[in-house]
Amino acid sequence: MKNVVVFYGGGGNEHDISINSKNYLTSQIDESFNIIEIEIDKDGNWKKDSELFKLKNRKLVSKSQEFKIDFAIPCIHGYPGETGDLQKIFELSGINYFGCSSKVSEVTFDKVATKIALEKENISTAPFLVLSSYNKEKVNQFLQKHPKVFIKASKEGSSVGCYEPKNNSEIPELIKKALKYSDEVLVEKFIDGREIEVAAYEYNNEIHISSPGEIVKGTSFY
Image (tube, rainbow, N blue to C red; front, top):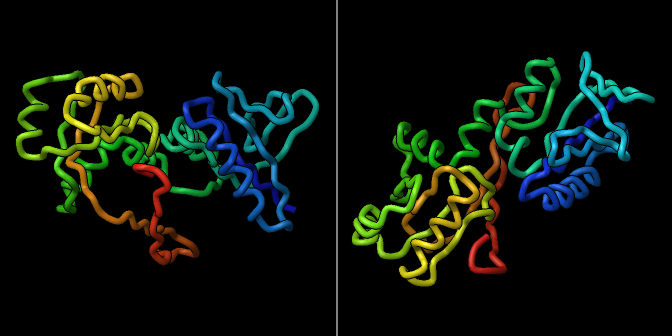
């Protein structure tokens, strides 16, 4: 029986969300695989049942036991699972894992880097402004063209450090709040539309595209 190691936690702002995702994911894995759950805490320790593990020769090793990693699944929201850091460890260790490469993860977790990458490929995105600190003049110039905006911490999850201002007087404070989560903030033109997501993945050297799914929001934004 092959070992599928599911990494979760991460210790960041979305640690508890990762636990929910891990619980659902493991319930969907075929019973022919041996599932091993490894929590990464806020200090970067790898733990299972409170026992510390280290990676050695593609094995998880503790004082009392060891497991071979046949396949790894990073089920972590934010650092280090979405940032590419955990994927770099897998790649350097020769461990097969689920998900995109460390390079792709690193770029796509950074909203500003993603926007720049899309623009280079002539893919349209909402107009945006990048700030490393609050700049009243730049913000006002942007608001003259785009009176309604969305504010996002560049290097965080899809909801952490993201704000929809109810009016423009809230914008300075929300930008400062977003800067607590990331060194750069994205001020983006608000787009009032439907949210459709499509997954693309490679399997057996072929690219597969999922059916589109619509996100139905229960609050002001997803």
